[in-house]
Length: 447
Image (cartoon, rainbow, N blue to C red; front, side):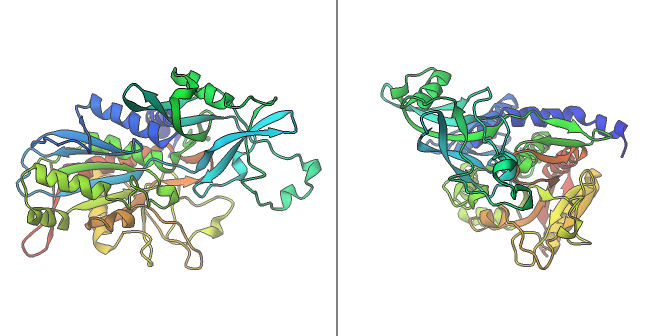
């Protein structure tokens, strides 16, 4: 790798960074993906309404306005299947509690928050932060949801000076209720003043806001850095890097004989067990409605699912330069050296010999390098969304990701080249019709 190679993909990395900057919460992620899809001719559907679909049609639907599924039906879906790339829209952060304002000795106001997801706490200190999410607003005859994003430095979680904690550099635990509440004002705010700030941002009266889901977000600007400008650092790379790159591949790929599906689920970081999470019925509901909308039977759906394929896309751990002992010696990944295939004997990941072989063949066609990741056998690892989604609708699946450092930090690091690798692999996947012969042999036909 040299600077010429990485500079070539700098623009694509900055596009990702710009998308992330405008997408501080899952609500913004979903809304911004919807805008991209509509520019590409996708029609919005509502779960509560009847769906009218046709061969060659392009559609998308959201749930909770924080998860989104888009699909493109092939022109000739007579003996069809589903080919799915799934990712997640959420990242670890802090959620603002309902009664949030907290007075401090008559001089400060801080906000009462709670942790969302398994975050690295230390990096949240001493960074410019702000608020984003959604507000539910009363209007004549009903309610409407409004996106909220305060686009200025508003809060900070200040560190305790080393003079007051001489053991600060000898290892420290953090209490989210006492150590990590963000400072918002150098005075005592009046009751409801934060809510009034939100109301002013969205142009309504404070008493018109009946509910809010607000989160802290990191305001630091994205950075491309390194001797060869090979690294990208910004918030939420886990998992918006995979979401954005797979979306680009989805939009570029065409499969006239099948149904291509892009899914981005909320709440992966807290277990996916919500109505909009990967463990919910959302994906299964959408796939079944596509099947019935095409005039197919339950038998047709079971046949289609049996030879469908999902790529579960969630970022992977790169080897840390200061902690090489934390990764398996032979099954480990490095930044800018290709897509990571993840495996786990305890089935935390969906990958098996068949699904790995299929994805490897896809990447060979796309000219994309692969790496392989497994946890050290004496260390527990994380989990992802693939297996949870498969509990609702079973199909072949592989877990993959892009290598990154500082996962679950508010400022993560990944590689400039790896965005292109996943985009190309996803495009090839969505152009390849994967199916089975009568004898069970797997066939792969690329358009």
